[in-house]
Image 1 (cartoon, one colour):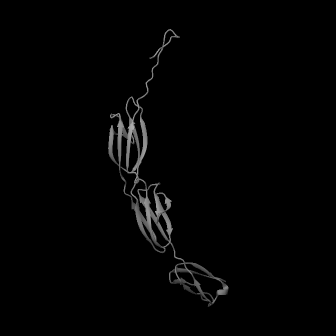
Image 2: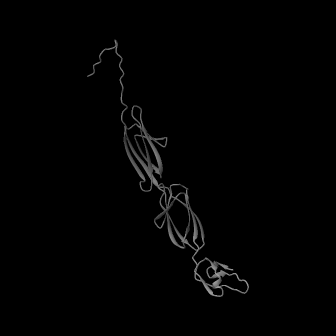
Image 3: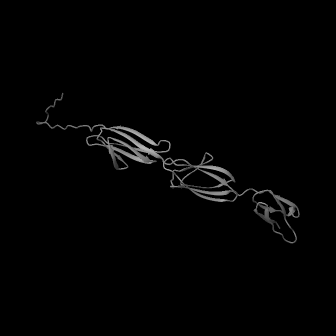
Length: 212
């Protein structure tokens, strides 16, 4: 029958023998599996081995679904964590979330190695710069009153719902995002007065109303 041999590590191999038949193999590198056929019995057999990949698990802190993972500047995944095999070698992993500073991790992946890392992300230092007309209009950010007339406030990276309101004027709303590419949001809002309505009843019916 056939005999099966599996490498254990570089330069080492386990061989199975039966009925005085023995396998001789020379190993060049890595790890592989090879079935020895009947006609190869008694011959020297060379097994060309490939290196086992490293398994890498990287997690961002905080864990966010819109985090982009790039390996050597190539996008490979979007999500809170990166889990994949790497061919042995050196890599630069970039962690890109719009609300945080881009973070990089240098990896040295070795054969059959398991790497587990957690990388903390630094929030973007941003700001909201808002001017409003009329000057006593109220400025709300994410539902909380932040000021009137104008606002100059530092804010970390993130999404913000802005609302400008005043009695007698039409309110306006906008959603903005403070990101590492646009850390400072500048806005100037001009509220419009509410349109006036005039309802007139005339007696007797059929009369005429003249306006100049």
